[in-house]
Length: 240
Image 1 (cartoon, rainbow, N blue to C red):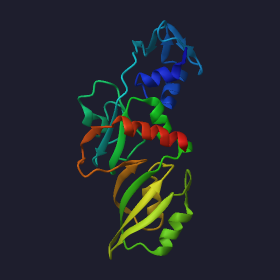
Image 2: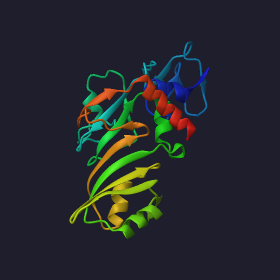
Image 3: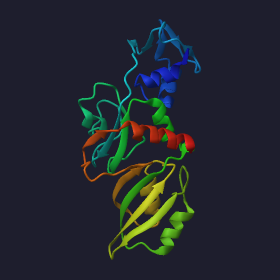
Image 4: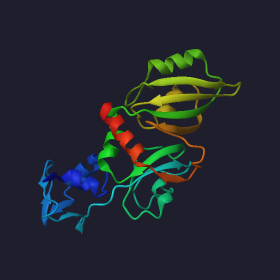
């Protein structure tokens, strides 16, 4: 017997939280019986599970690292007016989804998988997986502005407090920063830098946990994660 939301995640229907939402909204049924309460235990070898009337099957877990280009959005919603990051992996038959998000105007590393358990570990704020960004901003940033960023800035959905802030280059009209986040709020980097009067020119995620940007992984390209990298991500999340 296994928990229903875990089986749904393993079938590629989304993260654990997404699968719980599917259950609560009444879209899941077991042998014709609609299920809406969480915590349901199921024997997948004896019971048939359906989502929106379609029989679901467990999928082989797959993991890819994508260097997302600007202009692509991290959504699985069909009919999006913007190109989707998942469409860059057009040959993949399994239903996959992005782990976390990069906004349309940002580029860099993002993981795509059908492993709901790993997606939850990497996305949930309590696990604190570090993500590193290279950010170019307008203007020559001052030491005082850097101190303000390090102390944290209150925005509409709470205090935004980067784990680390480092100045890479200062130029007359622009600066390059390295920011490390453990908990990423919506467009957090853009919002806090705007508050110190240094709007973002370009933003690139260059590291997720132990995974670093490889010059060989060109923008718009992707590669599968190897077994060691997958185990490392699990170990990092559990240790946090």
